[in-house]
Every structure is written in C-alpha cells, then in structure tokens.
Amino acid sequence: MSKIYIIAEAGVNHNGDINIAKRLVDAAVDAGADAVKFQTFKAQNLVCKNAGKAAYQLETTEQAETQYEMLKKLELTEKMHEELVPYCRERGIEFLSTPFDVESVDLLLQYEIPLIKIPSGEITNYPYLKKIGKTGKKVILSTGMSTLDEVRDAVQILKNEGTDKIILLHCNTEYPTPMCDVNLLAMKTLQEELGLPVGYSDHTKGIEIPIAAAALGACVIEKHFTLDRTMEGPDHKASLEPHELRAMVCAIHNIEQAMGDGVKRPSASERRNIGIVRKSIVAKRDISEGEILSEENITTKRPGTGISPMMWEKVIGQRARKNYKADEMIEL
Image (cartoon, rainbow, N blue to C red; front, side, top):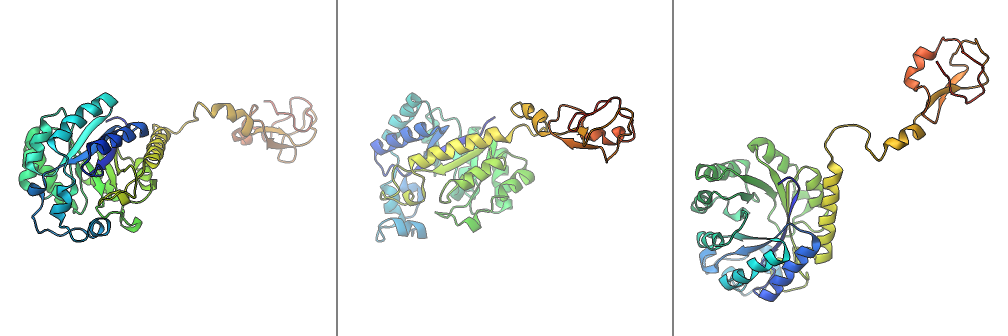
C-alpha cells in the first residue's frame, strides 16, 4: 500500500438492517475512504450465553440483555453479505469485514476479499490465528489490550502457517479512548521491534489522533463511523458522523501530501521567493571608487539578487571597483 489506506469502520452500526448497511457504504464512498469494513460473526460462536457486557456497552444498550442477546441482533447475515459485497463493488469501494470466529473466516473466503482484518480480541486465539495464517491472505492485525510479546507471538503463528504480509495496527479498545491512554508512540515501537508496516485503529472522540498517526507514518488508518451518533447500539456514540469522516479523510490525504520525500531542498513553489526574501551585500552609504570595503560602509539588505552575505569575509578588505550610492549592490 503506497498511500495511506483508510478504512471506514461501519462495524455493527448497521443495527442488523441491510438498508442502513448500504447507507453506511454510501457514506464511506462519499467520504473518500478506500474500504468500508463490517464485522462477521455468529453470536453463538462468539460469546457464551451468560457473558457480561463491557462498561461502554452497558452505557449504550439495554442493561437487562446479555452480550449474547445484544450481538445476536447485530449479526451480519449471509444474505446481507450476498448483497453488500456486490454493492460495494458497484460503488467502487473495497468491502472488508472482520471475522470473529473460524466459521466466519470460511464465510468471508467465499468472496474476493483483498485481506483479512483480525480484531484485537482475537490476538491470543491460537486456533483462529492458525486458520487465518493458512489462508495466505494479507492480514491487518489490531493489537489493542496486548503486550509486545503477545503481538510477537501472534505474528509468529501467522507466519508459521504461511502468512507473511502483515500490517500491525496500534489500538486501544476502550470506547471512547481517553487521550491519556492513546500512547500513539507505541505504533512506532511496533514497527521498530517487529519490522512490519504499522497503522492505527482509533476509538478516540474526534479526528485529531488519526491525523497525528498519519503524520507519524501510519500506512493504514481505521475509524468507526455511523450515520447518526444518537442511534441505538453499542458503538454509535464513539463513532464519527459522515461529515466528520469526510473531514478526517481529507485531512489525512493533506498530511500524506505534506510528508514529502524527506529531502531538504527548496520546493518548486518557494523557489521564486528566494530572490525576494534573501539579502545581498549592498552599500551602507555612498562609497567612492578605490575605498576599502568594511563594516562601516557595507551592509546586507533585500533583495537577494546580488552577492550573497555568505561572501561577506571575501568582500571585506577589497577596494571598491567603482562609485556606489547607498543601497546599491556591491560587485566583485
């Protein structure tokens, strides 16, 4: 991926409704994202019937229901996949979905998906990692809640099974992530320690942290979005709305352009300013021919179209070759 790959994370914000899912695809396209990503799972394979919810889920969904009951309503069914994959193709955006269980990996492999996205919660799921490794697909691995050693172990499992194209995403899984817990520099640590491309999956409020990640060298940015933050569901509240997603994509592309190639030199746009804002050696006052040039009778002023002030020591001590008026450029 030569440019920053931006994933608009629809996740479960479709609320189990294919029409909302398609509207999310449209919003991702309008924002200029490279891919729109959903989540593929069967609640019965993902969570025990009596499992509790995360604190943020308790705040944004019905308190009485279990995590299983919540997720059951948010499944992306096989029929929805059959509609969404070609719909994304028609709209010119890549369809991605995160599989949360082995059966869901098989479902996604039926489609021409460009890569498999592994969520943070599966980074210690050994049989799941082996299954994905055997596909040989390109992998994007989120690393929320994990230590460096856990990331290293997951990467080794994937590589041992045949997957060698891996991108690591630094991530914090709290929704929304407190700014003090982002630890964005850990993204660089992943790159340095594991020698793999890195990116960032963001759960903070706003768009400034993904933009900062882009400036730090992220090759992938992932961000949750929704049609409306007031909708019912666990992830809407910590998601961007469409106009914010557009602003983020635009800002990231601006940062991408601004990064340049790292060579320090005048840019094409600023070369015309050199002669205007730099200075030349000029007469401080009227100077007679033959007079010795010194700090008493020469100075530096704009424009920079004459002798550079960097020649100062060479000019000092020479005799004036002609008469000069004040502000006239000195000649050698």
